[in-house]
Amino acid sequence: MAAGLTAVFFLLVVVPSVGAQVDPTQPSPQAEPPPVPPAVPSPVPTPSAEPEAADTSQPPGEPETRVEAVPEEDEDASSDRIRYRDPLDIDYEPVKDKWDRFEQSLLGITRYSFFDDKLRFRLGFRFQADGTLATPSDQLEASLGELPDTADFRRLRLFGEGILGTMYFRVEFDFAADAGVKTAYLEGRKGGLEIWGHLLGKFRYGYFQEPFSLEKNVSSFDTTFAEVSLPIEAIGPGNNLGAMVYDASSNRRFTWAAGAFSWGRETSDNASSSLLSLSGRLGYQPVRYNEGRRMLHLGLSISSRSPTGDAERFQARPEARFVENFADTGDIPTYTNNLLGLEAAWKGGSSWAQAEWIQSRLDSPETGDPHFGGIALQAGTFLTGQSRPWDDLFGVWGRVRPEQNYRGGNPFKAANGGVWELAARYSTVDLTDGTVDGGMVRDLTAGINWYPNSTSKLQFNWVHSRVEDSGYANIWILRYQFAIK
Image (cartoon, rainbow, N blue to C red; front, side, top):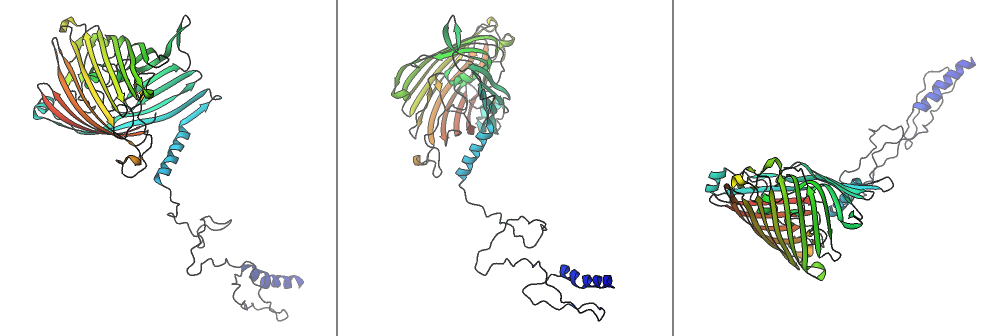
């Protein structure tokens, strides 16, 4: 009998107490008990000990309180009580600040150090994107065909550079029009090549630019115009495999470099590969004032070469990479190619000028031992008062870096930062001599450059190119460049 009463009590009191959900703000209603024996009084239901969640609605006029969209423990994530944050509720941040944070993050993931700082290197990339529009005369179009308009990457490079112990190294790979290894060399950080205890100079070996010509040794990302001048592009050697010794005097008035080179790739940047070549360049500054803001440089380059395959070929584009060659000698049988170059560079404050003459002498009795050559004259000025930098160790022009980066607003206003440069160039190359009729081309180029900061450059070139006895063409080139030094 006692056990039966206990079971009835459990059904009438405990179960309703657990299952009921009673609003604490309302009076507790009397639940109708099930029929029981008359001897047992009807119990009063007990309110639930777990009240409903409090109303979180805000009084009229009050701002809405947002709750993180994270459910509490043991709570269904689809509960109606969860209010999600407005995705547009983001603190304002200027674009410049975002870009600065992006650059800093890039530096963090591209710089590395290992083995107690014995190996340090960084990875980076640089590119040049060109848009080219060419309009030939009817006579030239009849001779060369239609010149298509293009938009393409002139250069798209990944590079790595760093220090391994006492050695500096650099590797570049190009994915654009002239795809392949661009540079790959090692160089001692201290000392150099010594013979009988005498230091000859800094020593570099690998795959790199031969020491010939001023314009050719300026980085392709630091040139004033989109392409190098006609004679330098058509005749000057580029990157080849070899070793070089170079240095400068203590007062940096004299610079010199000499090296031996062999196999290399023939590309638009390398007019001559060879089985063996000996090249050298000498520079002297007879005038140097005001820490180099006013200076005069004179230089001489020589190279003796044994052409690959006992043949040499010279071609000339109209100072535009994506336009066809306007002059071409075809293959010329030869065992020797001797190059000679003279150069001069001047700058005074914000203005600068440069002149080069180059000649190639081929030992080719079959074609009358022809001589080919040309000249290039160019000058420029910085409208914002910048002085074009000069590298006293290599004897070349350096990277233009604005004193103040562009900060927005009118880019033609000097107070907003950045650098503007105007430049002009006249160049000519003659590839006709002996029995070789390669053609003669003359170019007149005008350019304007805008440097918003030290990594970006916007270039616009107009080239008027005239081919002797074949007409002319007007070419417009627009380039955007991004390069980390």
